[in-house]
Structures are given as C-alpha cells and as structure tokens.
Image (tube, rainbow, N blue to C red; front, side, top):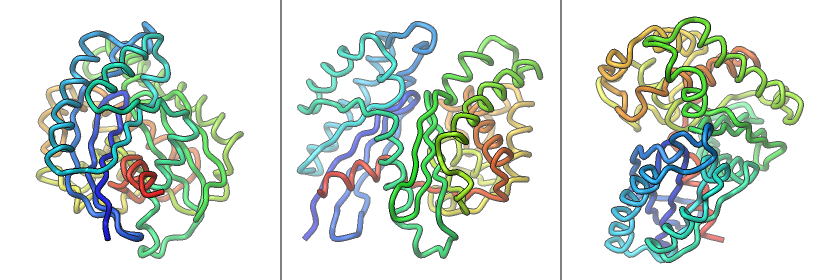
Length: 309
C-alpha cells in the first residue's frame, strides 16, 4: 500500500514541489515542478525578504496547493532554507505559507538541510556500484551543503556560499562578462568556505563526489551538449572534472544573452550560473575528484521520505 505525500522546498532561488507515492523503499513521482522565484533577492545586502520576492513565491505556492488538492496528497511538509534563515522578516514568509498550505513551514538549520539532501541524493545510488563513502555537494542559491557518509551521515556542514549570494556580492554590477578581478573575488569567497569545510567534515574519507541541485545539473546538461534539459539523461551522468572546468570557463566568458541562448539553460538561472558553476569547479580542484556523479534526487526527495516516518 502506498502513501501519497507532498514536499515543498523553498530555497533562495527557486521553489519546488514533489508529489510522490511512497511504498516500502520505493518513491514514485506523481508531479515534480520547479519555479524560479528568487526569494533571496537582495537578502545578503538588506537582511530582509523583499515584498515582491515574497509575492512571487506565494503565487507559485498557490499553484502548487491546487495540484496538491487535485492529486489528493495526504501529508504536506514545507521546508525553507538559506534565504529565510537569514531574513529578519521571516515571519512574513511563515504567515503566508501557513495561509496557503495550512501548515507551518520549517525554517531548517543548515545541518538538517544537509541531512535531508543526503537522504534524497543517496537513496538510489546502491545500484551504481560506486565507491563509498560519498561527498554529497548541494550548491543552492544562498548556501551550499557538504555531507560525507555511506548509509549514515558521518559529517555535514552548511556554508554561506551560493549562486545568488555570490552573484549579488561580486558579479551583479561587475560587467558582462565579468572581469577577472570579480571572478577572483568569487573564488576567494569559495576557497574561504572550503577551508571551513575541510576543517569540519571528513572530506578526505570520501571516494565519490555526488552533486545535486540546479547549478550542478545545468553544468551537466551543458557538458553533455543536450539540445534541451533532459532530467532522465542528466540523472546519474558522470561528468569529468576537465569538462566541468571547461564549462565553467565558458560560462564566465559569456554575456548574459549568450548564456540565455544555451538550449538547456533555464532563463531564471542564466545570471547566476557562472557563480554556481564556480562552486562545483573549486570543489573538484580543492578535493581532487576526477568526476562528479550528478543526481536529480535531492532535498525534495529527502523531505518526501521524512513523511513516511
């Protein structure tokens, strides 16, 4: 017998919905949707959620609630991450979500976000015969999670680097394409965060890098030269470090209009993808991984599985 659940992940850049049927150790998608709402617009600078960003997010959520009702999901969990954690007016977000879904959103800690991502990303890796332990890398819009583990989490940390945060801090007004000095500033922030990761998480134990979320999957789609975004091809693809470095270099040398013209590029990601790609690029360099295994399963799946408990 299966249980139908609804999981909502509200991040800095996007809000996503998964309606799924859970039966034993199997999760079957009913609906999996994503909208770019940029909830974290200017949060790094102002410390507050902008009214227009809240309204974009609530509009997407209202559409999601209609689908949840249509599909008859029995339980709903809403998880909010970096941008909402950082915002002084996060109660405005909490109140709006409660009104739409009838549940209180959980503004989870970075550690819990990391564990949910690990659960979602590793649930279907056993059949690939990969060398464990894994380092699961989840670069979001406002923060990036690093989790090391096999069947269980051995160490996890969330650091305040993300594609939106780094773009707004260093690239937004730097030029198009950004000059080398601006890119070097992004790299400096990433490397400082990786210093903290190396001190806090047993990265040296990891044999396989697993990357998830939009920055990683978009880089994979470009490396694979896809004519459109195809999650079935992207899921569990193996992208070499050399290919990631080349895609990152190209993205940072392009104008915004050039990036928009990439067939697999979501329009809402075209401005921040250079910063997001740099996170993956520097992780591969810093920790000497030869490739990244790309997963379309992530925190959404972890949220869904949590509803089976």
